[in-house]
Image (cartoon, rainbow, N blue to C red; front, side, top):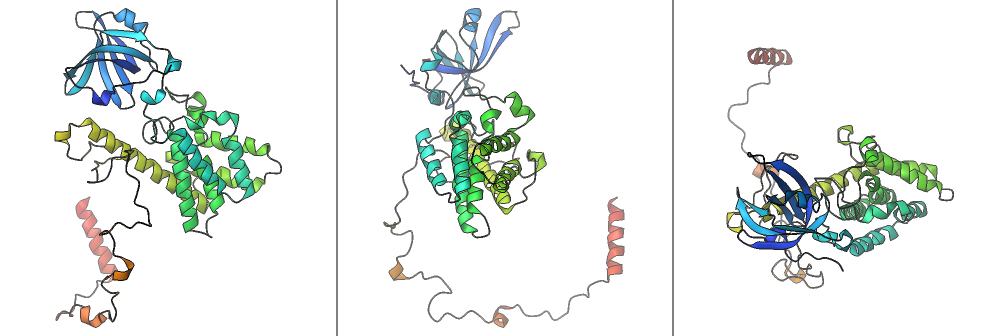
Length: 400
């Protein structure tokens, strides 16, 4: 039997008594000023974080609560320093195999089946038989089973269950659009192959959910190097896989972070590598900032919302939610089909565009009619290079 969460942290209100499953994010045994032990706990579910204190039964709760595991907890919800806080009055173990992890960990909006169907559609569009069989062999490899469940990042972008798969599908779709737009100057099959596989090394960079911490190889080598090496090993199992094509794909993987300061092993030296770097950066930043805006606004009381976030330390900016737009990841109505134009949003073909400059008989103004009149007094002559350098030298002397 799967244990489902019926009430989420986001919906809890001060004054109510809560009983339900929560996952332990962190746990500390501390002492009060009088020397009495107590527990400071952070519980999480997919909607947020809830701080908690346990003042009694401390030692008993230590045998039940553990970071990365869920427990059935109960107690009153109070307000403390403007935030919700739980006082633990009961806690009992849960069978960890009976949990639906999507209740306790932020999760991609689309299901694994939907994302895999999208990925398969992109893969089927790869015409080059070598790139096609390489992608299929890597994605279906037994060592890549975690590819569909891991987060795409630790903190900033796609940092949730199935985030790696969602990010890879998104980058692949964007690569398909960019490749089509810039044909024939970009090799679309190479770009899409690199887009699908660019983060495959994260399969070994992170531990499995729910902890998803960095592994030792992940810290010492990183996903760029591990991914490129793994693709090389897979290529060896394929009959007569061209070494030159393998080299190109590996270059896309080791260069997709752009610069060494951001973890790139090489800077992009192919047009396809440059395109992949920009696409990856775009998708990561839009997701990271979009999720940041959503979480900030959801944490604010409705009557106090201004649309602005707090300061984002990584990107060094405040962000405003665009009025009228859904929050990132929010369920939205499907778009109006192209065959059913929304009246009022665009003119019908019969009515004409009526854009200034396109109506019949339009004549652009003569350039002499729009040019401002010349001044009576001519401008001062441009100073000679020698005089300019002398003035610049005097200016810098004043500054320093």
